Image 1 (tube, rainbow, N blue to C red):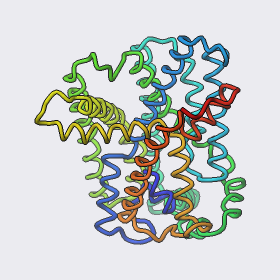
Image 2 (cartoon, rainbow, N blue to C red; image 1 turned 180 degrees about the horizontal axis):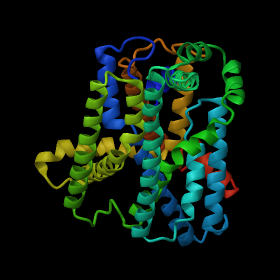
Image 3 (cartoon, rainbow, N blue to C red; image 1 turned 60 degrees about the horizontal axis):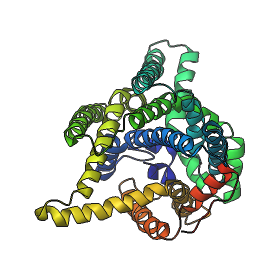
Length: 401
């Protein structure tokens, strides 16, 4: 999902037609991204982050964290250093950082650690519901503003306010292209001045979604979601219900976007507010599907499916290695992609169509699947994973195997 805002002005994340009319390929690309990936991948990442919080706490208690203090102190140091990494990432590499948000949400989530699974899910759904309602009211108010500005004899205040909002939602295209085609110093200066408070704004806008997903991830870890002892039927049921409800909801929203002729206010309502009720079940459906994929990779009982199992098993092993180097992959992707699209690199920002960006996605995914398995055969951690772990524990960790 990040590829669009690596390569195009940020409004392109929401609107399929930016700067010119959308081609059929661009529209199809937007639809695939919206239905299958938008919000769901972020949700999965948040689920995993919440699960990792419980995993670290459990391991910390088991090992008594003799060299690093209590599990709570270790967690706070991990989140503190993650926040530092996030701010460095934002100001010096790419504006779309999510690490600072995760550090803050992860710190808050830690306070819920002693709740049982049911209480965690209840708290998560309450926060998520309140946030969804707030987003729906906030974005829905744009329709009222549009109506007021379009009435005969509308006040200058209403007209100007509507014009300002629309400029904010759709504007800045040419200015962003000029900025990101410029040099590194100009881009960093812009972030340190015009975007200085953006990391804090990201927290205000997104913690109501991120924190609930983390709490559910903590609950799933406590419930041993993914355990091989559970019947695979339960995961098939989760996958069918979650992906069925979520997929249908997203497909209907995409249809509504088409029927509105991609009206700007409708698109923002759809992507920010109306899709939220379907995002959670679809992310859960994906999580169940991943468990089933792993189970399939481990299933070598049937001779007739041996070839398929071998292929799937090798793929899952590479995905697992990529997951164990997720921090390095995340920052590395930002460095590689900004070097391709920004002015201090190849300067392709704004020059590549949305549909053509899939080629960069394929190349990036291939790279992320290739190097980690080779690296982890020789080293215990990815480069940034090692640095983060060493800083959080206050001592350099052994790197080589």
